[in-house]
Length: 261
Image 1 (cartoon, rainbow, N blue to C red):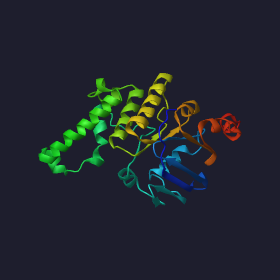
Image 2: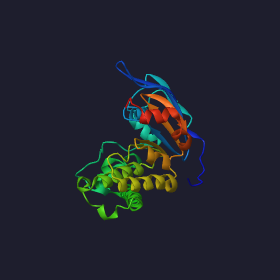
Image 3: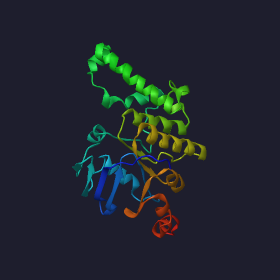
Image 4: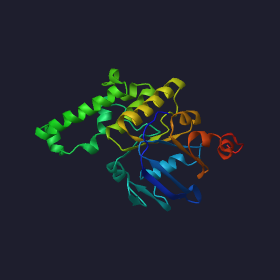
């Protein structure tokens, strides 16, 4: 690990329980996320990882518990509020506009930042034009950072899967989130694509200073890049701590290697 400075708690998840019908998706889950860390949530399939992420970003409303972000406590937030407060996310199932170019897809991530009204934007007058130029510069910076310059004008649907995932990351970065939620960013990737994505996640954390909450199935990937790891199994928390301690936990080993999965 590099010697970066981990700050105070920015996101505090308190006693979250989530039920669908009679099924407990999450039971009494608590953990915190500190400024500038890569905080991973791992667990076997069906452990409740995506449900947890969806509680943080306002898609699901938990029946119990609360989430505190920078000192403000919420029992429920909607997705727009979450985005406006500075929590961005990528999607496990790519929600990109397949017919639109790479640059236009990433520009859609700037929508929250655009201040001028629609008419001024349509006519490209005065402040709107200056604003658009500034937004495009920011997006070009992201495109360079993610090494997708050669594909700027390519419709996203024509790109290989690993590059599509990179565009999805770029769109999330365009929001300039303080905390970035990554939902299985390496799912479906080959080894080389995973290595690339790991490098970009580390660089985002390092160069943009973004705090990252990473959900991932691949334990090896997580152990390499995380500062701290939470482990879920069947909606319960069975481990929480630095990668080495979590890796050696008997409960965690049993969950990953156990006959129950």
